[in-house]
Image (cartoon, rainbow, N blue to C red; front, side, top):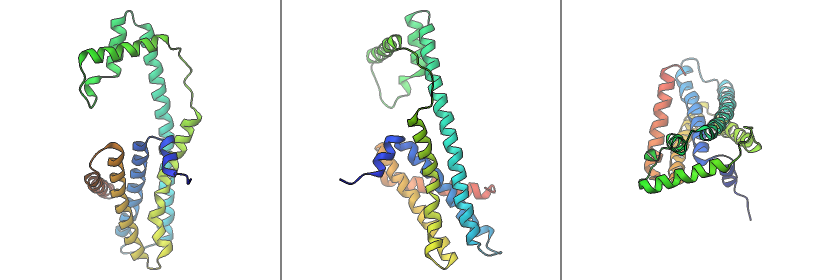
Length: 224
């Protein structure tokens, strides 16, 4: 039986987060390759500089995203520990249930629930919290694997951007192919996102493509 790389990735990092990192990397690469046509139009296209800049920028932002992921994960765990302590310190059951309701508002969930079912859910959570024992917040091996996955996903999106320059001798043709390839991947990312979330795949693909191009245009206009 052959292994499934996509399946392994989704076990390390949430599929939505993974696709979000890919989208970010694609936008970064596309901003550089599209912007290069404007910057080097008069001076001529320096392929070597463009390749180095694209790879370097995506790797740098991959590192930044990985660090932010670590900070976000640590913050999330600390917040959950703080919630646990608030429940333990509550004066009575009503106050503890209010803490849970504020942290997990059912009204904001994408479904409707009866009041009795909501009360039963909060009561179950309260029972679980009272029986549980607080543990020290620590950064796990799984968290480290997810941070590395973030770095690799953002960095890897530079590959389709620079690959045409190694396969085609005409630099300007390679740049057009690179831009087209990245735009197609924007669509594929949106399509895959809808597949995971249960949305309309084609519409999501088109929306992601248009949104990505809009963000690229804004970045270029602002000198990004």
